[in-house]
Length: 118
Image 1 (cartoon, rainbow, N blue to C red):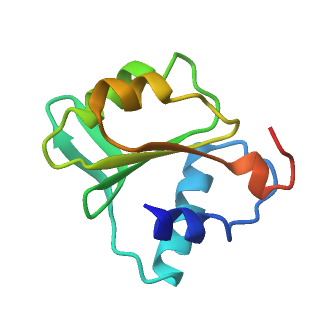
Image 2: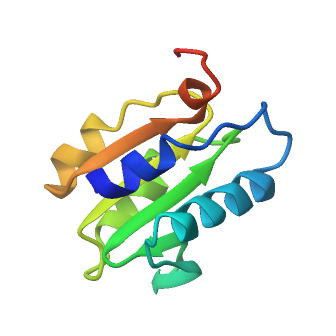
């Protein structure tokens, strides 16, 4: 997970209007750092991860219309998932999901990459 987080730290983008643009930037970053991934990977019933890097899910959320905790917890229950990185506009607490799943969960705030500590 730390290798992926270090790679994501290199992303420098202006505030984005579309999650798809962030997805393209994440894909390019992973490729540049030699991190293998599958995009839009089905990992279980009703679970499609934005990115799957080995056994780590990267889920992208810029403007969540609903709380992401339920979705995150559902993803963490999938057998092929050993950890999850939420790439979000703002820092989101995922302590409950981490505790409930027993798996590592991290929120990477793209605003920090933009130079705005939130």
